[in-house]
Length: 116
Image (cartoon, rainbow, N blue to C red; front, side, top):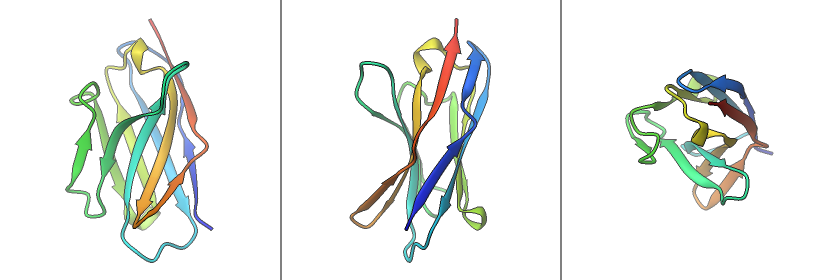
């Protein structure tokens, strides 16, 4: 059974930085993409960033490009989201996502709150 566990959320002031981590447990037989999504109160879940298996393929949502960096460590089955220059609009529950073939897995989410 594949499970994802996020950590690193919390309260941060606008302009500050925060790093989210996600560890994957369970057996996956294929290479997989990993990404981050977020959901703010009253809004739908939205894409933030994704990184491919080889780590040289990354893609970001326009509103985080240049501020957030996604990375992964395949040896540790982990993906990270470095969040710099955060803004109050970044306040949301952040979810780790793993996609392999037609399968999709989600973590339980970690709250990020950015104060003005």
